[in-house]
Image (tube, rainbow, N blue to C red; front, side, top):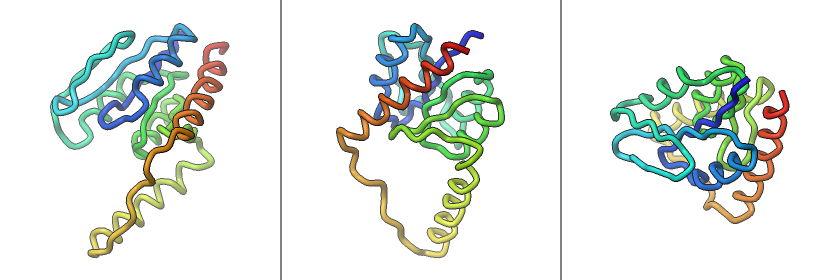
Length: 149
């Protein structure tokens, strides 16, 4: 199996960390971004798509194969990756699974309803150094798992 790491790179704070970690396992990395977030990184292939709602998500999910690892903070994309038997992980090291994705999608739905009704919600917490370390450790454990299969 030719496992690869795909990154939903628009606004992703762990692009460089992901590339460095995947390199330790000699796994290829593909960055997917739209034209407003275009980026190039040594050690990764970049795929740039046109701007549009979920454009990057659809291109990414069409490239995912069984066993691939996907870095994303998008619950909807994570659900599609799980359906294709991939391994989605968020920027803080949370591994999405069949056990947690329904609850996460439900929470997103409730938050959207609150915002549509004029309500306001707190944004995400400020990123800390521990978040990077937690992400790196969990990504390395996940890559080790998929690299041996």
